[in-house]
Each structure stands twice: as C-alpha cells, then as structure tokens.
Amino acid sequence: MKNELLIRRTAAAIGIAALSGAAVVGCSQTKDIGSTASSAASSGASAASSVASSGASAASSAASSASSAASSAMAGSPTTMNVPGLGNVQLDGPVADAYQKAGGEAALGLPTGQPQKVGDGTVQAFAKGTIFSSPTTGAHLVQGEILREYTEKGGAGGELGFPTTDEAQTAGGPDAPKGGWISEFQKGTITWLNQGDGTFKATITPKQ
Image 1 (spheres, helix red, strand yellow):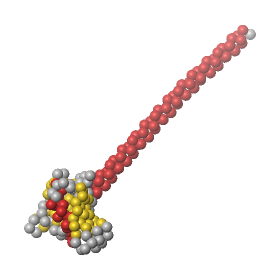
Image 2 (tube, rainbow, N blue to C red; image 1 turned 180 degrees about the vertical axis):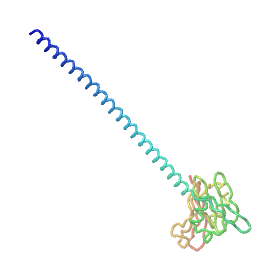
Image 3 (cartoon, one colour; image 1 turned 90 degrees about the vertical axis):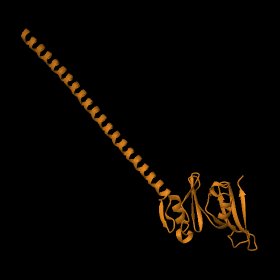
Image 4 (cartoon, rainbow, N blue to C red; image 1 turned 45 degrees about the vertical axis):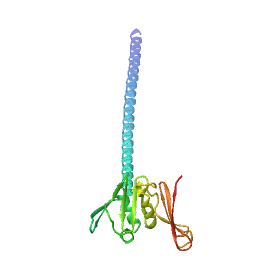
C-alpha cells in the first residue's frame, strides 16, 4: 500500500514538472516570436522610410530641374548676328527675345553698333529703334520721336531711367486728335501726340 502511494506521488510530481517545463518552453517561444515580429516590423518601417525619403529626394530634384529649365527658357538664348561693316554682334537673351517679338530684321533692321552697357543694363541700337534691357525692367523697344526725346534726356543713363514698357499707341493712335504714342520709364512718361491739326508734340511727364 505504501509503495503504491509513493508511486502515485512520484507520478504526480513528474507530471507537474513536465507541465512547468512546457510552460517555460512556451513562454520562451512566445518571446522569440514576439522578438522576431518586432524585428521584422522595425525592418519594414526602416525600408518604407528609406523609400519615402528617396522618393521625396527624387521629386525635389525633378522640381529643381524643371524650375531651372523654366528659368532658362524665360531668360532666352543669346543670338549672334553677322552685320556688314560691324562683324559679329551678340544680342543677349532678353534683347534677342524682344527683337524677335518686335518683328526682327523685317521691322527693326540690323544692329547699328555693338551693345552698350549702362549701369546693370544693356542698350542695343537697330536701324529702326533701340532696345533697352535691365534685370529690373526687362527689355523694351523705344522708337521714332519718343526715342529722340528720350536720347536728348540722356537715355537709360539720364533722368528718366530705363523704359518699363514697350512703346505703344494711346488715345486711339496717331490718326486720332490727342492720340499718338506713349512710353513709360522708371522716372517718367514720354508721349508723342497729335495736336488735332496734323502736327505732333512731345510731352515729358516726370513721375512724382
């Protein structure tokens, strides 16, 4: 009887030990699985962050390239013209663009001299008008009697500064009474207007 009781107690102890071992092993395996999952999640997040960073860098680079290309296109390309008696005359980008916009050689003729620097700007004379260009005002054409009046006032280096608009018709144009031509400058305005009897008069109005 005693031996039977001892055998039962021993079997029960062995069972408890086995259950404890299984619990320890299960807990250890759970920790290992959790650690593996955490490591995988961390690696995935790192990879996603790297991809996002690379994508943002590529997008930023593309935007910068597009902006640079747009800026270059807006600035225009220099043009070299071979002029009899002058040789090669190089028009910078803004002047070349303004020249073509005004009609090129058909409208303005060929350059009559090399470009002249005035302050931070450029003055390029053509047979039928002059283009004045500066980083602040852009490139603008002045012609005819307004150009004569402007030149007498010192041109771009004088009291009126650089033109801020192209010369244009005003008040119905030169065929209308009190109509004619107008040019705006940094420090004033010049008009060449029909006085109503077929004669024209220049008026210079300084800016206040």
